[in-house]
Image (cartoon, rainbow, N blue to C red; front, side, top):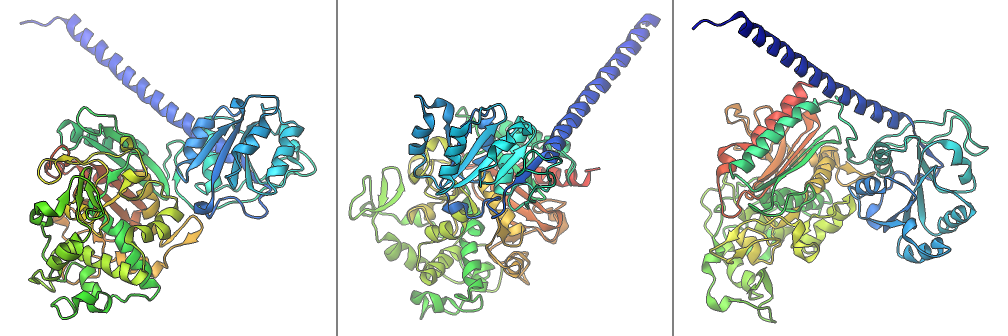
Length: 607
């Protein structure tokens, strides 16, 4: 068949036009990227902290604060408040919604239980004497921070106000996001006034503030990572959804203390509600390092427990048994010789459980499923105490290790494990969702379901821990039971990456973090409580690019957290891969490690 010259000409023209289109599209994307960077640069350059003589900004002891943000004609209040709530729960009040001749009087009544106020004001708002008098009155008894946006024409109105002001010339969503972060120390601010606006606000005035918490990117940049490469995470996560490896997933990447990627995929259940980045997941064995190990670290640092002391020192019931002389170090390294797990639920008899709670059946396992109150003490604990020791000195991963460590930390601290970790870490860090038995505090709409349990509890598990043994002790165990969102985990593990410091407070000494997270075993890759990267590079665990310093943990429900100090990186993956029933596809497709590989490649290709 003879092909005409016109055909070849058409192909040439089509190819040329296609190339022009592609080049044009790439140029458009590049221009958008540059435009976003320009907007970010303007915001950074035009933000100044004023009147911060007593160091109110950034906020430090946020767990002691009852915070309200008050919008005074501020158009970007939704963006601003959303960012504030990344750090701490903030109640939002809008002055424009108050009716009557003097809305400030009604506002006074509504802030009576708040001790910290954040006022959102733009230069388009009429700052009259009433407003200034209101500020001067409330700042006598409450901490007040003024977030001011726009030109400096109204700055002199605040001459008599003693509260600190964060002023951003850019009255924009980007400005709102940036100032909200500055209040909590998510960004560093070092600018001063370029000119004088009054006798109080003079040229050169401005107090620098340091970055002390997570920051959230207000525009993509090249700060140590090629963020455009992170789009390939989407491809892998969507593959997991499409292949039914999991109905949902949330992925977060933190580089240099900055959240550069945080996306949700899929639905809570197949065909269910759409996943949100703030959804709460059953962390499974991530509990070991996000709860129990933290307590062991704290008590070790305080000198209240010693890693080379034996179980009989802290648990009286081990005396006279073969577990008496096992050291805490062996337990934390999974070298105590414990059996991997005990299927406790298979031993339950009809008289052990009830559909309703009562003075006898007090331990809630799931909705309409209660165990008798002494079941752990009389049945489960004796099974563990008398279980065989078969592999002492060898590495055998065992959930029993953290059952025993829970008993140790509770006996020494005198507090229940869930309350101790909440008071000492989760609450002061600003972790708003982390905790055990989340249905006590949150709507089930925010909690992602795990397995539709057809064997043991015979119900869809939503807010009740998946692990059977943890459920049988009321949802609070050393090895499982913790629930949290990706943002909460980012806060916690950024603290560890910071060598124990976060939000202006020190939670651990650097040497304590180094001790527990570094390799401590001669027979495995393990740290104390923490899993680590495998020295056998052929295993590519947890990623083929992870540095030897990497530490973290995985969870049976399809979760993982990995920290790589060499790259100043935190990677979080949450999923419910066991919904509706247990599936191995997430592992078969190697989803978590492949996403982690993409992150490292984005770092290596940053230029």
